[in-house]
Image (cartoon, rainbow, N blue to C red; front, side):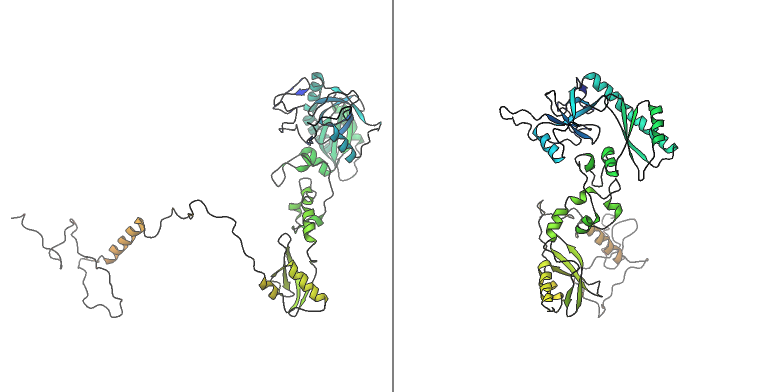
Length: 435
C-alpha cells in the first residue's frame, strides 16, 4: 500500500514512481536503505531467498521466497499466516536480508519461517484497505468496553490481518489483567477472531508515533528498532540535571537519545581525575564543584568557602594530586587559577560595511538637536513682564567669562517683527515714507 499522494493500482504504488519509498506519509517508516541494490550478483550465484516485510507500524518479519518471485522494495505481497493470509510491504531484499537475519538471530532453515504467496492483486488490496478503515472506530468501541468492565488496561492499537479474518489488540497494563470476559465481549461485538498482545510503553510510543522535545518525529517510530536500556547514570556522566520531566520521553521512560553521545563523554572523562578527589593545600581542603568535560576545566572551592570558585585545568589538578600523594601540600589553588588565562577568540567579524547597529539613529549635533538647543536658549533669554531686560555693567566676580557673542535681546511688538524705537539700543523707525 502506498501513501496518499501515490495512489495504488495493480498492487504497485504509482504516482511518484518511487514504489512506496517517497518519504511522505507512512511509506518509508522503518525502511532500511539498500546500498547493494545497484550491484549485480556474480555469475552462477542465486539471489538470497528471503525478504523483509513490514506490516502495520513497527512490525517486521522475514519470509521465505519459495516461488522465486521478482520482488523489489515497495511491492505489496500476500504472505502466509497462521490462518488465512496477510498483506505486507517489502522493505528489504537481497544480501542485506542475510545480514539482518544474522543480526536478529533468525535461522534460515527454520521450519517456522513463513512463505510469500504472491504479489497482492487489486482484490487483496481492496480487502486490506477495507479492514484497515474499521480499526479506528473499533478502537474507540474497545476502550469503552474495557472501561465498562473496569479493567486497568489501555488499548493502544488494533491491527487487522490482511484478509480481515483476525484482529490483534495491542494493550499496555501495569499489572496482570484477566481479559477472558473482555475477549467474549469483543468477539460478540466485532464478529471476528480476537488476539490480545501486551506491549511495553516504548513499543506503544513506537506504534502511535509523535513529536519529541527536539521538534522531530520520535526515533522509535521512524528508524530505531531495538530499545536499549537507559539508566540515570547516562545523565550523570553528561552533567545533566536529574529532572524527570526533561529526561523522560512520551513513553514515560528515559529518553533513548541519552545513549547517543554517552560514548563521547565516557572517552573524554578518561583523562579526568575523579570528581570526589580532594585537594589538600595549606589554606584548607578543596572540593570539586563543577566540571566542563569538553573544555577540560574543573572548578574547585575550599571547604567552608562555597561561594569562591577557582578554575583549574585537568593537568593542574593531576599535578596537585601527584604532590598530595607524595605527602606534599601546595600553598593554595589560587596560584594555579591565576596562571589560567582564558582568551576569548573572536571567530566572526562585521563585514557588512563595518557599520554599527545605531548608524541610523539621530546622531548628536544633528538638525533636530540644533533646533532644540536654539529654542531652549531663546526661551532662557526671553524677558518676563512688560519691562525690558536690564543689562548689568558689572558682571559677577565668580561668574566665568562668557566668550560667546551675546544675543540681541530686543523686545518686539505683539503685531510686528520690527523693533521698537523707544527700546534702548533699538533702531529708529524710518519716517521717510510718512513724509
